[in-house]
Length: 327
Image (cartoon, rainbow, N blue to C red):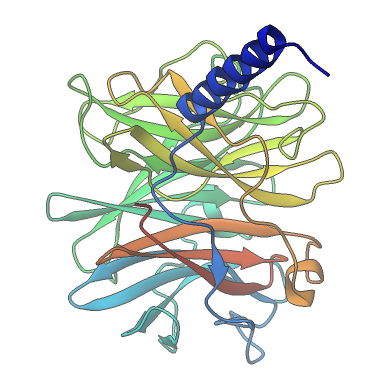
C-alpha cells in the first residue's frame, strides 16, 4: 500500500499535469467537423470544360448567397474556374459557363487552378495557380462581383524564392493588416523536394515579398504532414491568434487537414499546431478519383456561429463539412 506521503505526491503530480495539459491544449474556434452531405455537392458533368473534375473550391458569402468558385477540368487537363450559388451552403446551382479562363502565357494549356478568396474593403482578391504545363506560379486577380475579373499577374514567381526552388501556389491572405502590412501564407518547394509553407508580405495587396528565409510552417517527418504543408482558406483572425486551416500530405501522399495558430502580432510565430489531422478521407469518392485519398480544404464560411468547410475530394468532387463555433 502506498504511503500517505506518496499518495499526496501522486495527487499533486496529476493535478499539475492536468493544469499543464489544459494550458497548452489548442483552442480551435470550431467544434469537430462533420460532413454536411454524405455525397459530393458538385461532380463532373457533360463532355466539355467540367467533364473530368470539379474540385478544390473557394466559397464566400456575397449578397445573401453562398458563392463558390471551383476548379473545373476538361478531359485534356485544362482547368477553368466555375461559379455556383447556394442559399443554404449545401445545395449549389452552377452557371453554364466558367467565369475565369486561361488567357495569359503563364496559364496556357494547363489553366487556372485552386482558387482562394478574401474580401478586403469592397474588393475580392483571388489568388490562384497559373499553370502552362511547364511551370506553376501564384497569381492574383481582383473583382467586385465575383464574375468579372481583372488580372494582376504573377505575384510570387517560380524558382526565385528565399528557400523555394521550384513552383509557387496556394496564397491564403490574412484579411487585415498586421504591423502595417498584409500577410499571405503560400506553398513552395524546398531543396529536398518537399512542399512546405512560406510567408510573404505586402503594403498594397498587389506586390508581395517573402518574409522569411526558411519555411514558416515546415513539414514534420513521421506525421500526417511529412511531405506537404499547404495553406487552405484565408485565415481567421481570433482573440487567440491567426487561425489557418492547412492541407497536409504524408509520404504516401494521403491528404488530410490540419490547423495552426500563428501569433496575431507576429504572423511568423507559431503558437500551436495540430498533432493529428482534424479531417481525413473516409468516403469512397474521397478515396477514389483523379488523385486517390485526398480531402483538400480551400473554402470556409462562418454564418451565425456555424462554419462550413468546402473541400475537393480525390481531385474530382466537391464536398462540404460543418461545425459550430467552439464555446
